[in-house]
Image (tube, rainbow, N blue to C red; front, side, top):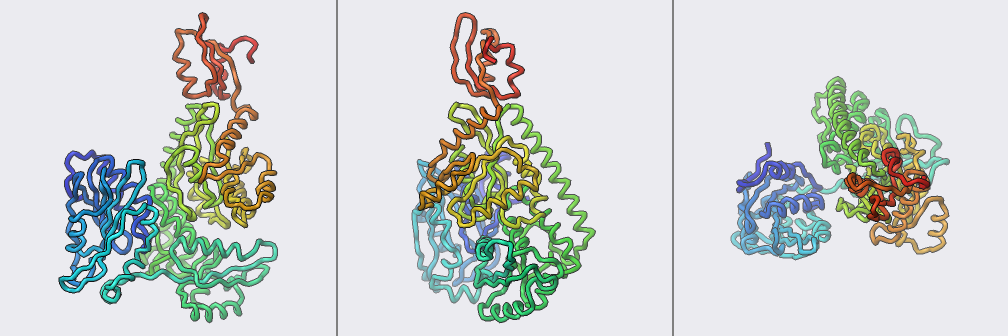
Length: 600
C-alpha cells in the first residue's frame, strides 16, 4: 500500500485514497510537473485545507507524499546518499492553501539543507487562477550555496519550463553530468512511402513528427520514397535503406520511426540491417496512449492494445516486449519480462478483457441512469487536437484538461449543458481520432467509444485552420464507419475560425449542410451551435411542444417536467396548472392524459 507521510489524523479514507493515487502519476523527464498532477494536488489540498508535498525523481515518478497543516508540512527523509557538493536528484512540489505561492524562508532553508533539484509551491488565487513560485540551487561549493528564485508565475509558464535544460544551465552542470545521469531525448528519423493515390506524404510525416514530439523525441530528419506498395521485406527499397544508414550516422539518430504499421518480419529485418531501434506509427501511438492513460480503465485499454500488437511479434522480432533500452515504445502497463511467451500473453489478454467487460457493464448502468432522465445525449467527435475538450469546457464549464497536444484526453467525460430554451442535454467528450489509428486501439477502446454509438447526435469538431482538415475529416468518418456510427445525425463545428484570415475560405466551409463556425477558445459561435442542437431536437421529432393542464393534487409532475423537459410557460389557473412544455418522445405517452384538447 502506498505510504502517506505526515499527520493524517482526521482525514477521511476517501481523501487518503485520493492521496495514494498521486503515486500513480508519471511525467516526462523534461517536465517539472504536469497540469493534471498540479490540479489534483491543489484540489486535495484545498479540500482538506492542509499543505501537501510530493517528491519527484528524475525519472518523473512520485516517490513520496506528505501531509501537513495549513502553514507547513514536514518533509520525509530522502532515500539514498547525498553528497555534500551534489544535488539529491529529487524535486519537491508542495501547496500553499489559502495563501500566496511565494516561497517562505523555511522553504529556502529546506532547499539548502536537502539539496533538492528544485523546490516549488503552488497556490490557487481568489479567482481560481493557479500560480507557482520555485527556486533551485545554481552553485554548490563546500559551504557556499547560491540559489535562484522565480515567482510567482502563472501555472502555464511554470509547466512549460524545461526541467532538464534548467538543470544543465546552472553552474553545477559539470558536476551533475559526472555524478547523475540525465537522460537526453531520443533523436529520431522519420520514414514513409508516397503512394500515387494517397495525400501529400509531407503532411503525413508532419503529423508523425508531432506524434514523435508528443512522445518525447527530437526529430532530426525525414525521408520518403515513391512506391506503389511497401516492400514486403524492408518496407522501403534496399537503396533507400542504405541512404538511411548514412543519414542516421550524420544526424546521430538513435531511432527510426516508420509512418505505417510494419509487419513483424519487416521490423526484424530493419533492426538487423540498421542496427538501431525501429518503431512504426502504431507503436508510437500506443506509447503516447501509455503516457496519457490516467484512469484504471484507460490503463487497462492501453495494456490490451499493446499486448494485441506485440503478440504476433514475439516470434518475429525477438521478445519485443522485453527491450532493455528504455524510452519511446517501451512504456506502458504491458508485460515486460524476457521469458514471457504467447500462452501467458493470451492469458493476460483474457484477464484484461474480462476486467474491461466488467467496467463496460458499469458504464452501461451509468448510461441507463442517464437515459432514464430522458435527456438527449450528444457526443463530441473529431480528429485529435481539433479542440473537443476546449469546446466541452466552453459548453459546460467542465474544467477538463485541454492542451495543444495530440491525444491530451483519453477518458470520456460527460457533462450537462443548457440549450437556449432551458432544456438540459448531456454532452460527452471522446478520445480523438487520427490517420491510421491502430485497430488494436479501436478494439480496446470500443467500450469507451460506445458513448458515440449510443448518442442521439454527433458534433463533429473540425480544426478549420489545419491545411489537411479534409483528410482529417475522412479519417474521422472512417473510424465512425468502423464503429457503425457513420449514419448518425451530425452537426459539423468548424473550430478555430479566429485563425482563418480569408473570409472566402470560411464562407466555403460553411456551405456544408448543418455546419457552424466557432472558436471554442474565445466562445465565438457557441450560442449558434447550441441553437442548432435545439433545432435538431424539433426538426427530427426528438421532442414535441405540448400544452398541459396538471391537477393541483399532482403538482409534483411539474417538478419532473422542470428536471427532464424544456418548460416554456407556467400559469396557475382555477382549473389547474397550465404548462407549455417541449416533451421528449419517451415522455409524451405518460403526459398524454394531461394534454389540452386540440394541442396534438
